[in-house]
Image 1 (cartoon, rainbow, N blue to C red):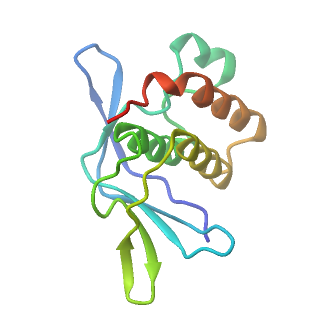
Image 2: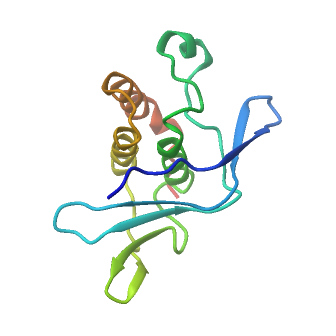
Image 3: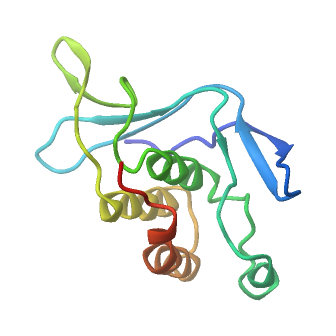
Length: 148
């Protein structure tokens, strides 16, 4: 597998004035676990997200802002959280001999957080920042993860 490319985003404004981003073109992330076929997550064009959900007070303390080297991880994580693991058709596929097929996999919050950490590592985010960010989603993510 290769290092994930960063998705193209444009900044937009929410009603509350907080920064939001829109995915300009669909973004794909491929990965493989030992003994499993290649997996693909596809985030569609026009998906809107808030980037890394870091409280503003922590921006200067941690150096972690809503956008940066962690952009790809934040897009994937926000997408998985938006659907609480119940992804739409063609969003999570696996590579078989005949091409890409939907997995039908129901993601757990822990799996979403682990994929977030994996992408952070593959994008070159430092180990210390990865730890802070992973701890943040594990401790605070429950507020955004909703049962459907």
